[in-house]
Length: 259
Image (cartoon, rainbow, N blue to C red; front, side, top):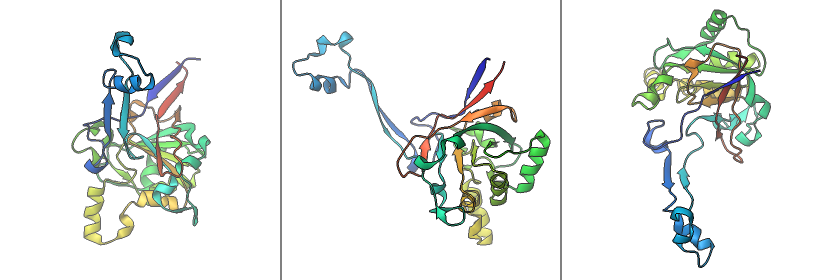
């Protein structure tokens, strides 16, 4: 049966606005000429002219945080505990069967930047697409941020998932979610305004903090979600195995079986 794969991941790259300035990746490219002395050092007596075209290898030195690029957050990122007091699992402990499951997309592109999605919004979208959630399904949300990637307003773009909206998914058995925004929650600049007006600290990172009640993972900085149907596809998003870490980079893909 034919199989189609859609790349849901963004690049790790220099000079693109993918994160706040202090968190952006840095990649140094060492080409076939710049690396030549490194290779010669392994083989005493070897001369540059002995190498085909005088070239050694190309390698890259990459400076990253675990939340650069498209990545999977572990429950440990959200808090030290999950499931009402259990130790939160780190990225190397995330069950791999959470990371390869049938998926559903909720289209929230019509919500303005900074909007906090409610449980009622989730139910309305599920009704619109005619879908009932099943345990371990992966749920991704398509926001306005997806098409703003790389633009100056990317980090401040898109809606975010509130606590009750997140718990609505988790109580249905969902354990892995995702967004094309910088964060699962509403962008901080908008949350800061609400906090300044109310003084209510529970508004801060409320979707993430739902993991204290029910442990879950989510993908951030997805791409191409507007290319996906509402359902009928799989997502694979196995994270890099970093011991004791809060997140791991992933080449997330959507997989369609059939023509």
